[in-house]
Length: 330
Image (cartoon, rainbow, N blue to C red; front, side, top):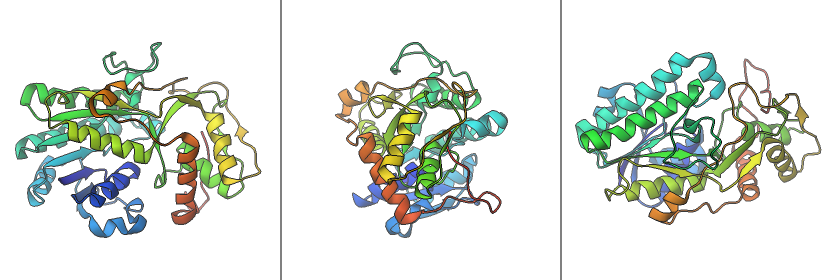
């Protein structure tokens, strides 16, 4: 395939680019002019990836990129992904996540792209008593980030029904692994704290439960969905993928500390679940398994061991904030 990955400099985009290159596909990574392709540098991956510095909201710039590289497959991963930032600046989040999605879809329609996979999120489901989430339940997003992903999700699927663009939506659990350079997210912050023998700070009481999907399992799921788009059975559909079970935040933090061999204890500073977040989220991936045979292969502890090894090799210190070490944990 000739592939464009929007958000190609991020955690998932980097690993997806690596997998595509290893099987012989050509890859273009789309990022903004201020993007830092740090994660793509692992094992020389960036040397084999074409880079297009185009804002995801620039439809005409995306069209030019699709044409210049004769792209037939698009993975739309670019987004503002931070829940806290979305709460503080919802308009910017809606602009990037919703406007950006329809810009990509319009460009794909104009250039006759053969398959498009759009990253949604398990957050699009919102608060629900029905767990695990299944694809046919209503999207009931309650907070800005969640709403932006739900809106993009619905828009993307409409392009199959209205314009016959072969598109599917990926609603994945929390993807983790080496290459996440965002110091506000749970696993990278905890790993960095553990490597420095600092107590990771938890900004809840540690009881909220999340579903964690190792990045290489997520990549295999994206490739499975893209392959399924050669059949109308996958077009216009949404697909869940997750690790198979929820895990409490405190349990995940303690597991990271054990994997690292740190002697510190978590610093629990919160009470209950933080504002704007849900008590428990996890997904049922049976639909994707039935269609493609995909299942998660990497258990949480093994995934964390691989993640810690990546940070030890490539990123032993977190990005600084105004010259100061990153604070940790949530």
